[in-house]
Length: 343
Ligand SMILES: CC(C)(C)CN1C(=O)[C@@H](CC(=O)N[C@@H](CC(=O)O)C(=O)O)O[C@H](c2cccc3ccccc23)c2cc(Cl)ccc21
Image (cartoon, rainbow, N blue to C red; front, side, top):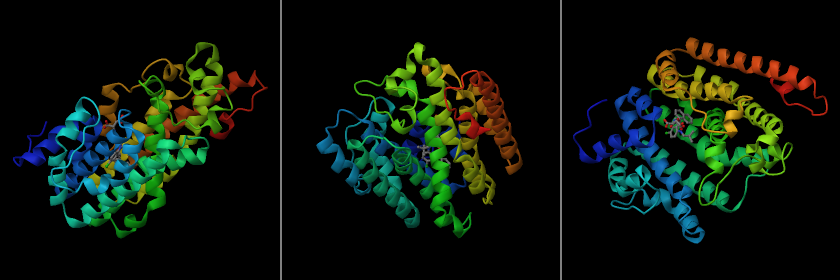
C-alpha cells in the first residue's frame, strides 16, 4: 500500500479511506493528484453524512436539522458529532481533519462537494419520514443518495479540465451511473439490511415486492422461495434499466484514469447482478464476489473494449439464466413473468 502523506490531516484522510471502503480506496489511487484529494474528501464527507443518516440513536427531531445543516457544519473548522460505530465512529471523531483538507481544496471542488451535500442532506431528511412505496419513490431516494454523487463526480471531472465541460451538465447520465450502483447494493444487501438492529431500513419498493409477497420479510422464508425469486429477478430487471445509460456516460470519457475510476464499480455492479439473478442465496446469506474476481475486474477493466466485453458477458449470462428460468416458469402460466422484459 502507498505510504501515507506527511501532512497529518491528509494522512488521516488517506488512512481512513481503506477502513470505510474496500475497492474505492484502491481505485481512487488511479486518479490524477488534484482530483484524488478532492475525491478522497468527497467520499469521506459523504460517508460521514451517511453515518448520521444511518445512526438510529439520533432522535428524528435532532437528525432532520442535522442533515439539512451538515454541508455547512462540514466547513466549520473543528466541527464533529458523535455518530456511527467502529470505523465510522473513528471517521466522525477525526472529522475535523477531513474538514481541514476540505477547506484547502481548490475552491471549485469545494463548491461541488458543498452543493451535493446540501441537496443530499435535504433529500435524506425527506426520506426519514416517508417510506419507499412506488418505483418513482425508489428512483428519487437513490437519486438523493447516489445519483447526486454521480452529478458531483461529473462536475469534479469537468472542473479538473481532464474531461469536457459537457460533463458539468450531464445530470441525467450521471444520475443513471449512481442509480445502477445503489440499486445493486440495495438488492445485494437485502438480508444484511432486513436483519439490522434495532430497526431495519428497507428501500425495496412495495410497487414491486407487493406483486409477490404481502410483506418484505416474507421473501426470506423458504416456503416463499419461488415468489421471492420472481421478486428478486424483477428488482434486477429494474436495476438493469440504468446499464445502457452508464455505458453511454462512459463512452464519452477521455481520461484513462477517470475512465477506470468510473468503469470498475460499474463492472462490479453488473457482475453482482449476474451473481444475484434467480439466486436464493440473496435471501439466505451475504452474496459477495470472490476477492480474486474483483481483483480480476480491477486489473482487466482498462479500456472501453474490455468494459463492453465484460458488460456483454454478464448481459449474456443474465439472459441465459433468464431463458433457463423462463423455461422453468413456462410450466407455471398463472403468473405474468417479468423475464420477458429481460428477453
Ligand atoms: C452510494 C454510492 C454508490 C454512490 C457509493 N459509491 C460507491 O459505491 C463507489 C464504489 C464503492 O465505494 N464501492 C464499495 C464496495 C461496496 O459498497 O460493496 C467499496 O467499499 O469500495 O463508487 C462510486 C462512484 C465511483 C466512480 C464514479 C461514480 C459515478 C457515479 C456515482 C458513483 C460513482 C462512489 C463515488 C463516491 Cl465519490 C462516493 C461513493 C461512491
